[in-house]
Structures are given as structure tokens and as C-alpha cells.
Image (tube, rainbow, N blue to C red):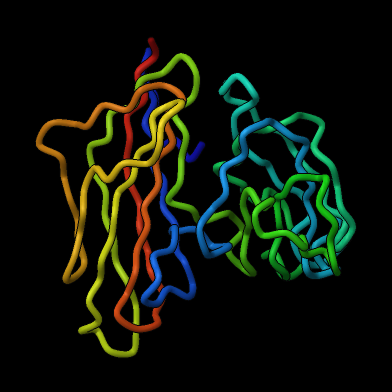
Length: 240
């Protein structure tokens, strides 16, 4: 879960991501790009790479761990042994996959291709899923973990959002940035909780913003011209 500290009934979560190609259309900040389609039912997850070198005996990524929640929003994770462009199917069903991390690799020390996590019902072409709306997460080449400013508060926890940021990289640093911190309560729709514009933003909440269990949180951005966008946020989970 990308936790960086835990004490008693509290758990600290840091989520951060990037989108390699944002322009004047609002997109979520995750390495697959575009707007994520959040699943409505839990499914088994297919995992495959766009490069044959990401294989149990290859020079790229060999094994990884995926993290998410099940149909009841209970935290779960499992290890996957990669098989290049061939689909490997998760043992568990997931409603969300919010982080994946490469655990071991061959001589190149990094994942060679993009590793995809998707509804296993989808077909693939050379390891790449054919349906964007069925993609849960991705690990782009040489990053060894997914990068997504998207998270879901698990069952049995209340979240306290206390910090978030947005940033971008472009040839012309004067590109105007428009961003939205979005929260969707369980059974509801995404609402804007903080709107950001004009330039880079780093926002510390004077009073942490409460997030109920099963809520989805994400950051979306648009730029006045094409560039790379970054975002992240920090949450304290309180066991309830």
C-alpha cells in the first residue's frame, strides 16, 4: 500500500503518480493515461508485459506484488510470477488495484516493457490489453512500480487527507496547469474537493479532510499544451 509508517490503529499512505502525455483534455494522473474506469464488480486480474524479457527467467522483471481491495473493499495482495507477453491470472478477485511493485528482476534490474493489470476477460495483443476501460493499473518501462494518484479507502478505515500536490514538466515552463482533487463517496459521484490552477501546487490542509470507507480518491489535470503531469497525496488511515 506504499505505507511509510504505522502505529496502533493508524496507517500512513502516500500515493503518487504521473501521466506521460497530458494536454488540454482533463486526464487522471496514472501511468496508463486517460481517465480510469473503476470496476463495479470484483474480477480476476490478468497480468502481462509488452516485452518478453519480463519473465520468470528473463533479464527484465520476474516477480511482483499487486495490492488492492476485494469485492467487500477488504485490503488484499498477492505475488505474481511473470510470463512475458503471456497472461498470468490472479488467484484473487479485485475491485481495485491501487499499487503494484516489482520484487525481483534479471540482469537489466528493471521491467523491460509495460506491465498491465486488467480484467482477465479481456483479450491481449502481444501482452497489451485490447480494451482500455478494462485496465486497472500499469507499470511503465524501468519504473518497477505503478505510479497512480488514485486510491480507495478500504473497509474498516476512515481516511484523513492532509497533503496533496500537482506538478508538470514541459518544454515551456509557463504552461498553465488546471487540476482537480476528486473524491467519490461510496454509491455517489466524483466531487471536486480542491481546484488548482495557474502553476504548480503543494497544498497542506490546515484541518485534514475526512474520507469515509469505500471512497475513491484521485487527481486529474489538464495543461494548456502537451506535457508530463505529476500528482500525489498523503492520507492517514484510522481503523474504525
